[in-house]
Amino acid sequence: MDNMIDVMNPAAVAAFIRLTHEATYQHFAAEFGKTIQGFFSDEAGFRNITSYDGLPGHPGMPMPWSPAYAAYFERLKGYDPRPRLAALWYDLGAPGRAVRYDLMDVYSRAFAEHFFRPQQEWCHAHNVRLVGHLVEDNHADHQLGYGPGHWFRAMRYFDLPGIDIVGYQVTPGLDAGAYRWTLPNGPEWDEEHFSFALPAMARGSAWMKHTTQIFAEAFGAYGWSEGLRMLKWIGDWLIVNGINVVSPHAVSMKFHDPDCPPHYNASAGNPQARYYSAWSQPFQRLQKLTSESEPVYNAAVLYTGESAWTGSAQPVAPVVRALETAQISTVVLPYEADCTGFPAVVLPYAQYVPAVVLERLTALPSRVFVLEGWPADAPEALKRKAKLTTLPELAGLIQPALRLDPPTRSVVVSRRRAAGGEWLLLQNRSLRDTWSGRIGVPVTRFDPAANRWFEAPRIELPPYGLWVLWTGTPPATPQRAVTYRRLREITGPWQTSAGTRQTLGDWRLWPRLGAFSGTVRYSRAIRIEDPHSLSLDLGEVAEIAELRVNGRPAGVRIAPPYAFDLSGLVHAGENTLDIDVTNTAQARWEDPFSHGDAVSGLLGPVWLLQAVAP
Figure 1 (cartoon, rainbow, N blue to C red):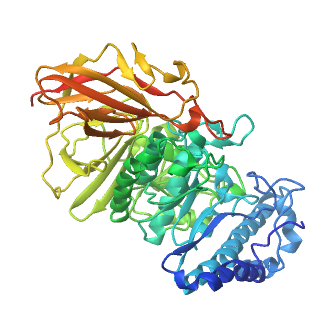
Figure 2: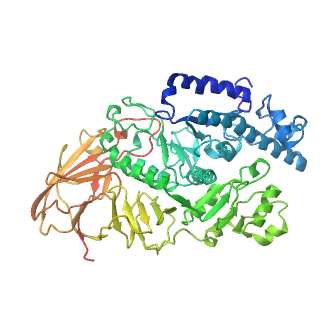
Figure 3: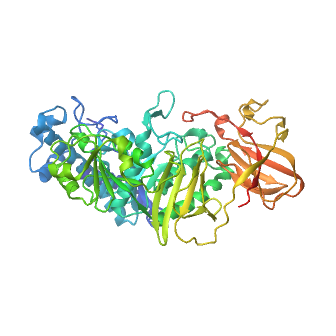
């Protein structure tokens, strides 16, 4: 093909480095290792076809080739591949299957060794790192076409493991099924693959590299519907998955830039820009926490990508989902990884698995689980050693990171070991439901938004919630945990910057505000008899709330619960409330990426709460 990039040819790659890396260095050498920290490799793949479906077995499909490939293949495998290339397109039985495996094996190794390794070596020689991600979309991770042949082999030469999380590949509140990026004709993402397989693969690569840092390109291509509330959910998702080095996608200073993310700067027209630090400062604390601690895993799932080259193979995504939603902290590792030390190792169903892999599984001291059926030629020793089970039964056979009481599948747990104890990060991925319960472990809670410590006798995880718990001695005396009860609903008219409103609701239904994007102030007086131990709960807000009480700031909330401690802010008698509510720019601007409805305003109900005596 005349438009194919030869990613397997060392000479072609040397020319690529000369034209890109070397040219950059000539202009900015003084900034290398300082302002310039690394080179970003974005979405590299074989590109022999423009498709995520690039496995062998499609007659007529163009295949990658390089002048360097045959000699490299013969050095690795000991025979000339050219007389046997038909195995890439046609089923030639068991001998053809072995050749197909060898061809794909060498494809992936040649790509990694000849394309990524020289780039990493050049970067290290110039005091920078190679970072970025491949094309992992919709199972391209183990394929040709858009893919690298074998994700782990290519990722070996990145200094940080990296994945791409943009454009509704991860969607708040949705962790399985198909979801379109752009409507009505955009690609359909396999949400389970992005939500569970990719982050677990990145964790596996980090474990093999002995690093606590994982990279992602994130936040972009969600359109103007991506307010700070969505940013928080996705950011918490990243952190719980151990991803703590983030490159925002397509940052721009242009006003109303149709590309994305929705540009948190004053010049771009985003009404939420002034509240950006309410998300970024807690996120930076979480980045530091995860960078300075080590993950603890309860199970390792083996990557079946190379088994898919020659036969049917169960994807890892549903397996990881079954475990993670049962609070079993999980990592995905390639066949060649040493899984010694993991309490449990899971082999998803694979029709064909290399014999050496089956032998290693037999020798593992860990508990080994094989899903759905034995691989062909599985040795009897493995059948005696491992337990054959099904996906619905699997989670019940493995010890979880935490036992939640009551059980739930909406909470995902990350365990991280640090000096003096363990961090337990719990994310409630529900957008509507609060999980309230106990975990059976004595902990204190660190609030990254308030930068304070609290007692945690009981867990109250609201929608969008992330709780950071510590099992050791906290570095500061924790404040008492307070439980509130509803005291009085705040009803009646509100004075707003758009006129008096008798009831709360979506301001787009108000006169002249149908396409308004910005801030509306809600004001009123309330009478308080006893000003002690009170809180104000605004109910539902779309989507940022900033509260002032008697003219004094009470804080900003970018996600539920929209609750504010009123201690020291109210007095007996009349008190004034001023609530600034800011929506997203989706109400004003259409774009090709935004999903959902741009509901806007203080929706309530608003309640005055009072602390319950301990």
